[in-house]
Image (tube, rainbow, N blue to C red):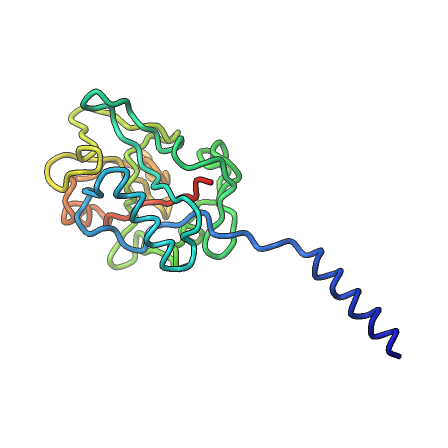
Length: 213
């Protein structure tokens, strides 16, 4: 009888060891923005915000990067969001994979939907039809994840202005208006850079965060 119990225990341990480990969160949509419109303190400030939110839920051990592009200015070259976020794969707070790699992330086959683009706390963010609508997500990027440029486009002074200017936003719920209404990263330009203007077109100053390592 004792021998049978040891055999059973050994079998259970082997079976447990064979189970794949759960993936750690490596992607989230910020639950809140810094609160000053598109003035995020530049890329560095946006990255710090990502890290602070992740750290608050016990995920601060990795390097977090905001999915944001900047335009060439003041002698500095453009920075492309797709080049800042590592190589993937990326999982949300509920261990659901949203994309395998950078190419998958920017393809039609990614798993980015309102239901999978969760906050660091695992919550769903309001979309079109919810009150208030917060589906406009700051990116400053084109469909392929490179820096967006256009006539009178300022990128909100590369994420340091909450006044005049405009920036590119995506729709996390993959619906709405604009040139690319179903795009998660490049749906249309914002009305302005202030918190009020971002909210006026259905946003709240939120942005995407990726684990870059």
